Length: 236
Image (cartoon, rainbow, N blue to C red):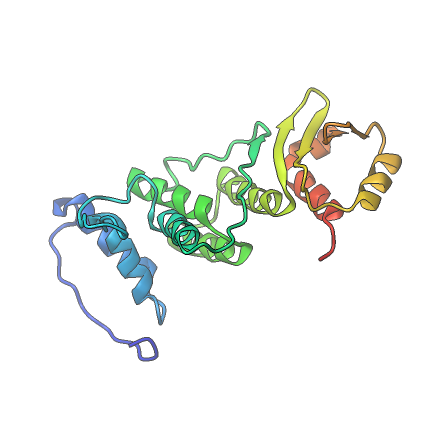
């Protein structure tokens, strides 16, 4: 039960004799060992064996193309629309900053687990979930190498950019350009102060903020982009 810990001993043949699905299920049991983790194990099992079409008559198929978390988000959105509920438009943010966010093969050797980690990170809805995934990844595979640290920084930036209403963040010859949507949740006064106080900063009529970056800032471009959005974000 969720409030009482249970224990079990599983006797298995050599791990190389197990099927890929069996290895992934055992890995899930090792990963989700805290109290109340049963739902997450069940959710992963749905992802592994296929959950079918939740809204129709089909009861076969796989969620491998999306992952359970992202599939659930899409399902919730579709159900809300069918009920006639107000659904906020989701901003698809394009981020091209030339940062390596690939999980090294020697960090997570199993390709399926690497893909699952990418899916979990990309579909995380908030920073708390990202922090949980980061902690689980580090507990299981060891200290995060720089590219994986950048992957989580990239995901945090994307979440914030979606919240603020950013369309794109791109690397330029001298720094970066942030394009805001028409309904971007930024403070005009904060934007005016930034443009007037930061050297070579410009804001175009089409909603593009251009910033020149020093070599040090360019090395931490994800951090600088995030700090800029936090600085400009309008207060609720």
